[in-house]
Image 1 (cartoon, helix red, strand yellow):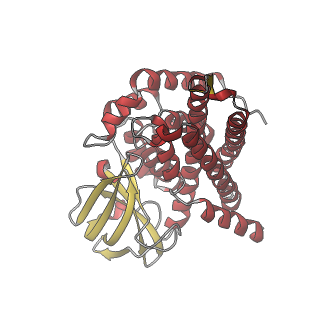
Image 2 (tube, one colour; image 1 turned 90 degrees about the vertical axis):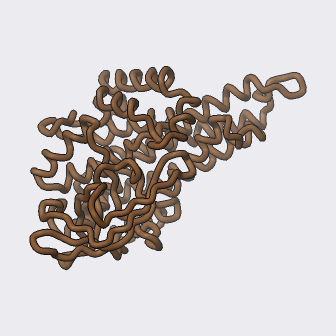
Image 3 (tube, helix red, strand yellow; image 1 turned 90 degrees about the horizontal axis):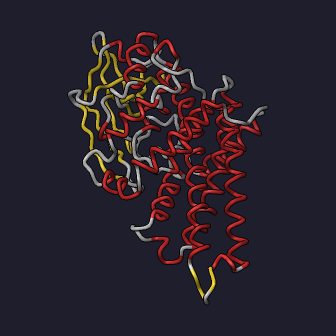
Length: 374
């Protein structure tokens, strides 16, 4: 297997690096995080112009026919740049769900809007007390004339405050189903809040929200399989984002060790700190290999193979992320936890990745269960 990037992928990497170094510095990010939206809409427009929002979609629906490996490349750079834009929620999670599970009419209506930067979507699936189990849903969907009535609550919906539409999971008579719901639908209440890493999420209350028949995504009863496939794509993308952050932390920490002096010499001269730095680099490269495995397997049509590879990668990457994040903070001393230093923000983002769509224990359990099943 060839693990080298193509010329187009390398060019995209270079373009993203220039964008983040020139237009998305740390101080700019802090300003954006404190804004009402919590992300930069002009940066979102730039992503659309660069083709990032169209990357994983079919060319006949406004996309670029990109693979999960292409998304991995983008997510790694977004991680290095600590981007706040809802790329994961809109493009990776909801975009892949619509691409893989929606009707042809829904794909034609939604995917070009996402690709053009005209629509922001959020997946409203997890509920209070649900933890990470995808099938424990209490929200209900009942027939109402020719359409549906939705009742229930959703928790920690990534990108909820800025979303134009939601993909809401609910239990119908046929089983778990998915519905497209406009953000302004009567009966829908969204309570937004900032997350620990500076992004935005929200809780949803659905009280008699009525949607038309064509709001049903795909077929009634097929929602669980669609959600789990989309979550596998999202977890593979999170692995890549974590690797990007770890790489950035390694560079920042190495530079600090070269410049910070103690007893008249750079602290990087101390052998004990050199060993810790070496451990960080090794952990990052091993995590990169696992993230690549997750990206390669994320497009698999075999659910068991996809789930096993993604869970193995997520568990391993999170283990490495904890080591790299903690070492980076400690090697910076007291400065490592200050808000004025980007290291603390990288560390907080790694912590949030570790709690999003399954923590390390959850994915270790799922991986072991898949081995037993095989």
